[in-house]
Length: 166
Image (cartoon, rainbow, N blue to C red; front, top):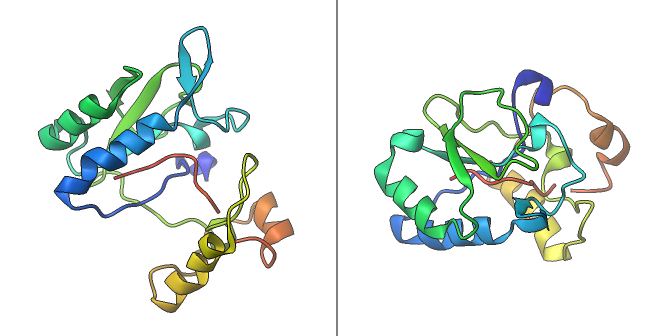
């Protein structure tokens, strides 16, 4: 997916009053990597596919969403307009802000949905969300190219995503 310019993200549909708490959770998830640098807890996942991203309709021009993002941005990370195929944000204190009208969400492979990541293991209730969302028609097979994770875990593990888009 990174060769196609994509990054790992989570799509959320939020009411306006839910936006600030969600952004506080997002910015609160960054860990200090040292020397005043903040990043994802999975800092060993490097490269543009793992860049930190927020997505809003209108991107940085969405004044309400950007006001909420600035209010929640406790580490004062730079919020920069994303242009697509942007570089990794690791060790840059940067979050790309995407315009979801120009850069819409695309679901990744089923094998990458609701699985454990390298830094944590999640309860069965989390993993069961995959089947529930499939049954509701909200999660489906894709035409994404094969990757090494799916090739070895397609049936065994359901994915957590390292970035968030709202």
